[in-house]
Amino acid sequence: VFLDDIKTFILSTVSEDGEPFASHSPFVKDEEGNFYVFISTSVQHSHNMYNTGKAHILFIEDESKTKHIYARRRLYFKARAEKFDENDARTEEITQLFEKRFGKEAALLRDMPASRLYKLIPSDGNFVIGFGAAYKLDVTNKKVRELNTMNGEAHGGTHELGLKKDA
Image 1 (spheres, one colour):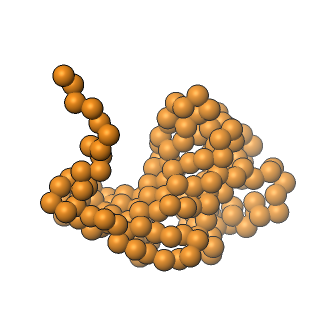
Image 2: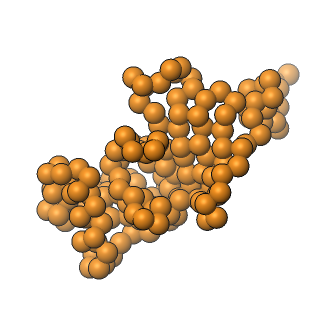
C-alpha cells in the first residue's frame, strides 16, 4: 500500500573508487518483488551498477503528506543490480510495465538506444513508519520483524558507537 502512490525512488550507487552518486528514477515492480529502472548510459548510475552490481533504493513519503518532517515514512533496500542484455526477451515485458504505469511518457524509452534496463533485486530492507517504529524486512522469506527501536536515545545510540571524541 505504501508504494501504491510512489512512482519514483531515490537511487544511490557507488563507483569502484567509492564515490557515491544519488538521483531519482521512475520504477516498475514485477510479481516477484524486483524493481526495474531505465538508466541512460551517460549517467553515472549506469557505470556504477555495471561495474559493482550494487545499488541502494529509497522510497520516501511526500513531504506534503507527512505529519512530521523528521518522521517521514520511508522504505529502503540494498539491491543487487543486473543489467539486461540489449536483446533480452524480458525487455519487452518490462517496457510494457513502464508504459502501463506511466503512459505516453514511458513510450520514449523504446526510442532511447543509449539507455539500459536494470533489474534491482532487493535485500536487507527497512520500513520506518515514524519515531521509534521501524521494521526489518526479510525479502527472501517475506517476513517482517521489529527493529530495536529508540529506547529513549536517538536510534538506541547506535550511530555514536565507536566514534572517538576529540581531545
